[in-house]
Length: 92
Image (cartoon, rainbow, N blue to C red; front, top):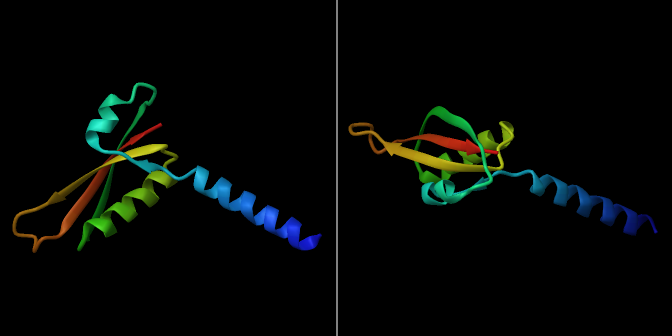
């Protein structure tokens, strides 16, 4: 009986944790969503080597700010050795 209770508790915890994660959407998807409100734009002042690193950081920051959705804006600056600067628009 204890095993079933522990398994059920663990499952509920994992479902509730994943339910609050922000969802990455494209810019065109964000423009077509009628039932969302913009929370503003976040900027992460760090040079990222890969887009995956930048997206992971944006995802974490969007979750921290309570966003349901975020639309990443990744920018490569000329002369920066290909580093990526990241920002995203957040939506509720």
